[in-house]
Amino acid sequence: MSTDPLDVPPSLATLCVIRLLDRHQIPARQRAGVLEKALGITYQPARRRLIDEAGWTLEELRTIADYFGETLQSLVAEGQSSSSVSAVLVTGSLRIPCSVWLGDTPQRARPGPLVATRPTAGDWLITPAGDAAGVESYEVKRLLIQTATRGARRIAVLDDDRDLAQSIAQYMTEVGLEATPFYTVEDLSRAVSAEPFDGYVVDWLVNKQSARTLIAEIRGRSATCPIVVLTGQMLQGKVDESELASAAAAYRLQYFEKPVRTSAIMSALELGFGRQAGA
Image (spheres, one colour):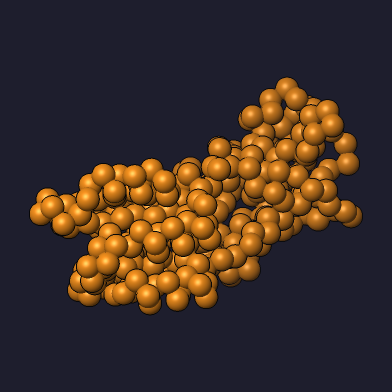
């Protein structure tokens, strides 16, 4: 019997990667070099993955798919069997709904980089094979993730200082959000009535008018969206600190005294989105 590792049938992950390289017309002699570049690893680890001497991580497969402008879904859509079952892909703290096509018989030996197990009366769980060591599991022949696509989060920025509002909105746009500046309470109120935003950055005093009523309106439309309040006149006594504190408690606000770094505002929004997701 030949002991050449190239005679060993490739795992599903390796097969999917090889087929991807074939689709992109990468010659066999160049494959390890391409993977070396795509994954940021040295040549030998890349070659070991191609000949099934080393396993693949889910993140490596995602990275390779991204490198070639494909999706993880298109990469792993191989080895389809007759019918699929609903399952949950467990990776780190994430639980991602998916559909899977499974092998016909359970195995205790490692059947591939990902395996399917099913606790009694529970969902099918898809995990790395190492997390299911010694547990009866099924080969994952094909895995399909269908995620709902959505655009960038929409952020409203309200400040009567036009330069500041535009500067904050521009920064947020550059980091991947869709930010719109507003300069009056009335303009933002109309926009919110038409379509609420995902998050808000609001100056407490806009043209000498308190934004409290607007904030109450926003919170009435969304109980969990992050609202960051800015104020630059507290030290001058033009803002009632107790009123701002009571509003912060009533409407779950985060507030900053100007000047404040835009990165700090961004962190506050991200914290709010994180809490929203965990609610």
